[in-house]
Structure formats: C-alpha cells, structure tokens
Image (tube, rainbow, N blue to C red; front, side, top):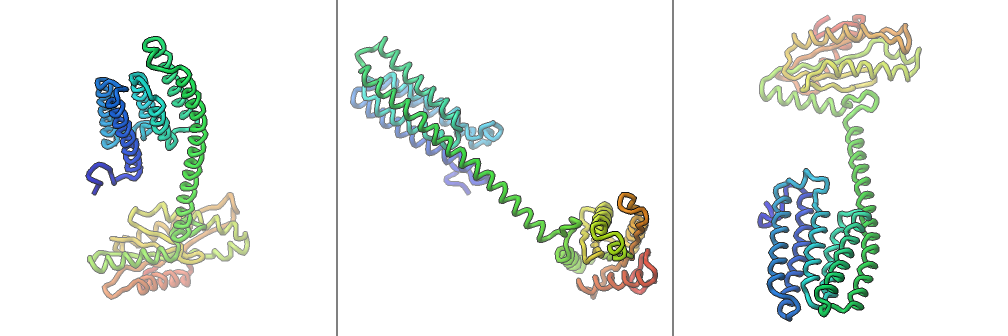
Length: 366
C-alpha cells in the first residue's frame, strides 16, 4: 500500500526522494501564498503572480511524474536536486523582479529553498547554485535600476545582496559537512553489509575449503530426506574419506595437507549439479547429497570421483604425494531418517577403507 498512492513504498530510496520533493513542494506552496499576500498588498501585479505560480505547478508536476515513473533512476542524480535548485532560482528571481518592495521577505524563502540542496548537493555544487542565485539577484537589482529605479532602494538591495553572499558559503559549508556524513554513513553501511556476509559465511561454510560446514550439510541432507520421503523421490548420499591423509600431514606438514583438502574440495564442487550439496563432514571426510539420484547413478558418479581423486598429482607441493579415496554410497529407504542414511554411507566408506581404499562401496557391499 502507499500513502494515498502519492508516496511509493516499493523502494525506500524512491520513497525518500518523493518525501523530500513533497517537502520542497510545501515550501513552494508557502511561497505562492506569501506572494499572494504581496498581490493583496499591492506590491505585486496579479498577472506575473499567476504566471509564476502556474510555472511552479507545471514544473513540479513534471518532476513528480518523473519520480513516480522511476525514470529518475536512470539519471546520474536520481533526486533531480540540481535541476530543482536551478528552477527554484529562476522562479524566485522572476518573483523578485516583479515585486515593487519588501524583497527581503522573499529572500528568506530563497534561502529556505537553497537549504534543500544541503541534503543532496556537495560543497562545490551547492556553492555553484548559490553563486547562480547571487548572480540572478544582482541581475534583478541592476535591471530594476535601469527599468524601474523608483521600485528599489539601492542601499537596501546592496545590503541584502551582501547578506545573501554571506549565507551562500555558510550553506556550502553545511552542504559539505552533510555530504561527508552521508559518505561516511554509506561506507559504514557497506562495511556492515560485508561483515554480515562474512558472519553468514562463517556460520554456514567451512573456512578452509569454502564448502558447506558440517551442520549446514547435515541440515541439507535432512531437508532432502524429508522431501524424498514425502514425494517418494530417490536420494543418494555419498561419504568420501581420503586415504592416507593423516600420513600426508605428518610427512609434508599441515599447510600441504590444507592445500590438498582445498583441491579435493574443488574437484567435488566441479562435479555437482545446482541442486546437489557437498560439505566437509570431518577432518578429511566429505558428505555429498544427490537429490533425485538413484543408487546406480550415484555409484557411477562416485566411481568417477574416486578415479579423479586417485589421478590427482601435486607436483607443485611434492611429487611423491599420492591420494585416493574410500567412498561409501547409500540411497534413501522408506524407514530411513537423516542419521540412519548418513550412518549407512559412513559404514560403507569405512568398509571401503578396510578393503584397502581407492574404491566405492554400498551398504552390504564389498
């Protein structure tokens, strides 16, 4: 839902932009009302007041339509702040030209509109708009001195121009300060997001191999067991135990052993489909869940993996390293739960290891 359909709620950034636009629109409405008082007091002819007011309404209607359509997101400045600031300068400059007195009150509205630039503009951008505003006001004073000198007091106008010249750099300072805070907040948000991603990775991934950690892969197997039993679909689980890995650690060191584990993990990852799950189950043990795969297909998959592991060479680490795997394959039965299925795959891997390793075994097989 939206607030009367005026403010979008599908995108928080667009919502904020429209809210800022509506705040500026409220200032515009106030300015139109104040200039209406000028008309009432005889300080402004109704025709330029009506023309300027119509221009303000049309311009803001166009900006609102762009914001609500989402086309603004293609722009370099999605808030369209710069365009709105320049337009505000133009409308206020026209108003200052046509009034015949009390321009100081309109200058206050001028400053209020300029303050909206603090939210989005950088220091130099705000200063540029401020210099434009001073130039426009100076042009109004110069033009009036030639066309309607009786409508102005030069001393008063010069003082007001000086006051505006003082306010612009002050506004630029605040714009720069707010821009710095905004950039700092953005950096902190990015760092926080990265920290959350790292925390999530640490909670679900094995830090050495980048595979799912033990709790995560067990949960994945449990989910597939529930799905398989509910839908009557096949599920195979593969336990991979590296033969002689402890000897590699003893002879070549744990750093070399870590590299071996990472390469085996890469080999496992490369053989998976998108729906498969692999995780590090123990020190040198890996658990693989193969949904919608019957035992015969799982055996073929495991045989290929076993050959790939035994064919690995580690010339860059130590030419004499040889690696093989004892692999157990178990398929889901009607009376299985998560742990009985994993237990049967583990028992099959143990049987493969006891038979000399470098082979694939199913429960009850040899």
